[in-house]
Image (cartoon, rainbow, N blue to C red; front, side, top):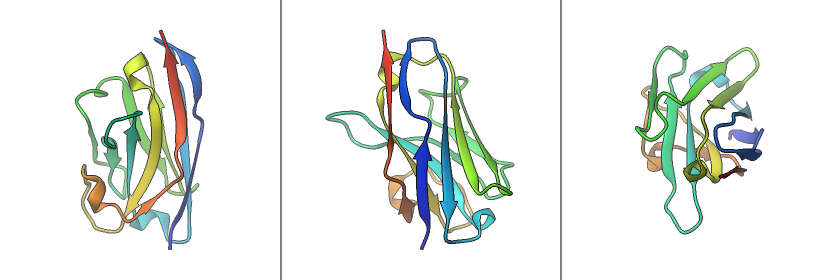
Length: 124
């Protein structure tokens, strides 16, 4: 079993930045592919970014490409999401997720474990 705890959400003005963190426990972190998803009110959960077990490979949704950066520190069992140039449409609950296969994944159904989510609100 893997436990995931997100932090770093909050209220920020458009154009600002936030860094989300997700601390993992319960399994060797370097064996997990990690991802970030988000869900806005009234919308389905959508993929944001994913990172391979080593951190070498990353993949982003088109809507955040060039603005968000996913990274991981396997020594600290933590994955990060640096969010720059935030827009009001980035407002959502952001979820950290982990999967135990070997390849990065962009669909929520591939992920086995989820955090409780952290709210990000971007004001215009």
